[in-house]
Image (cartoon, rainbow, N blue to C red; front, top):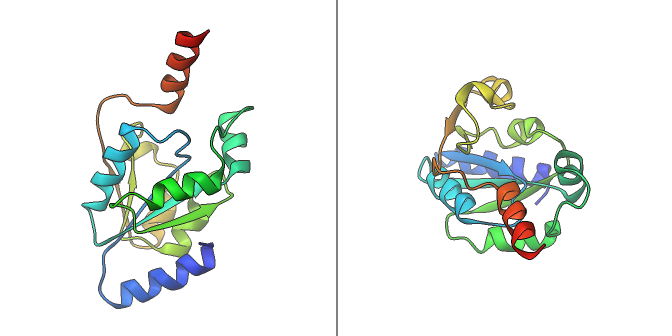
Length: 154
């Protein structure tokens, strides 16, 4: 789904009185931390949009060799989760334009953030939304998972 398609769908859902939640991330190597984050995000509203960083954005944000899984496959994995309603691929380093398009009631971020460190917080407030930090407080990072795999098989 494109930003324009997401904007049109979100506008229709909002007009129906649905509470829209937006979560975003790279989701490169889907793991239990991601599942718990998305499940908690979905509980905050009626519809969960997930913004997925494009392959180019992941490479810029995470460095060479990433993403490990191409965007089309990450979209397919996310769409298969019962808590995810819609997936939007975006190419920016932050989700500011995605926030402006979807205009969520809530922008959910994982516990690797604090309310004060969410880069999209000003964009969320500008559309009348709120920021929520949700998910499993345990550290389940993709970076740590990759490190453990490398150590095990090196």
